[in-house]
Amino acid sequence: MWLFLSAPFCHATAPETFSVQVPDGPFSAKLGSSVVFPCSLSPSFSAVELEVRWYRPNKFNTPVLFYKDLKIQESPVDPQCSDRVSLIGRLEEGNVSLKLENITLSDRGDYECHISSGVWYDKGTTSLTVNDSDDLVRVSSWLLFSPSESEWISCSVSLSDQEEREGRAMPVRTKMSTASKTPWRAFVVMLVISLLSLSVVCILLFILYKRTHHQKSAAAPWEPVGTDAAGMWQYFHVYLGTSHEHIHTQYVGNTNDITHFYMKAT
Image (cartoon, rainbow, N blue to C red; front, top):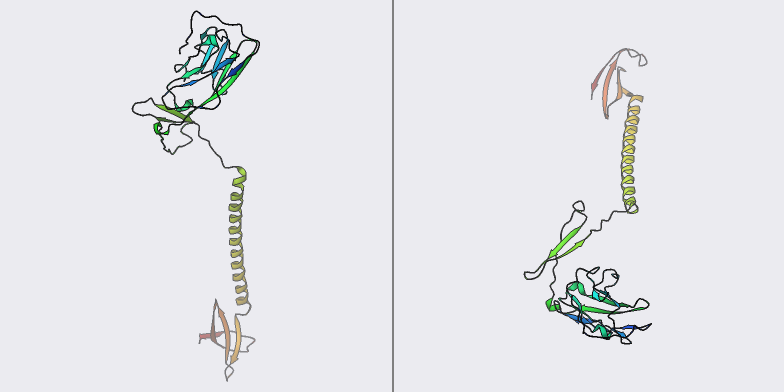
C-alpha cells in the first residue's frame, strides 16, 4: 500500500463537524484493471491527523484500508485487498480517495469511507461493478455427493495463466418431516389390515361352506326311491362325497328291520 504526502505541509484545525463527500452512482471497471473511489472532506481541511477507514458492508473491523496515527495500519485489514489498495489523494487538502488495483469479481459491491476526528465522524458510500463480459469465464459442473462423506464441498477453478480460485459450500440436508411420512404410513397400515381381514373372511367362508355341505350329506345318506314288483328290491339314493349315485340294494326282511343288503351302482 502506498500513501502520497506532500512535505512540508500545514493543516488547519479540524472543525467541530464535517461531512464526507463521494460521487453518486457506481463505478465500472474491467476484470484485472484499476479503479479510484474519490472521497473528500467538506469543508476542506487536512485529514492527516484523522482516522480514515475504507471498508465493505458489515466489515467495519476488517477494513480494506485503515489509516490512523499518521500512517496506514497493517492490521486489522482484509487480507484479500491489503496489497492492492492505496490512498492517492492529498491528505492535507482533505482528499482521502482510494485506489483499488487488479480488480476481481469478488471486488464487486459497496465501499464505505468512514472518517473520524475523535469528536465527530461521517461516512459516504460508493459501489463498484465489473461489467466487461468478454473477460469473464463461466464454468458449470455437477457432483453426486453423499452427505456421509464430508460436511463441506469445495470447488476449485483456474486458468492456465491465472491463480486458482476455490469456493466452499455446506450442503443442506433435508429430512422428510413426520407430517409428510404419516399419510404413507397410514396407507400401508390400512392396506395390510384390509388384506389380512379379507384373508380371514375368505377362510371363514370356506370353513362354513365345508361344514354345511357335510351336514347335508350326513343327514340323509340313504333315500328310498322305489321298489321292484316282487317287493324285494329297494332303491335308495346314496350321497357319496360331492357326487350322487343311484345304488340298488337287496335286503331280506321287513324294510324297517334291514339285517343285510347288497348294493350295486346303476
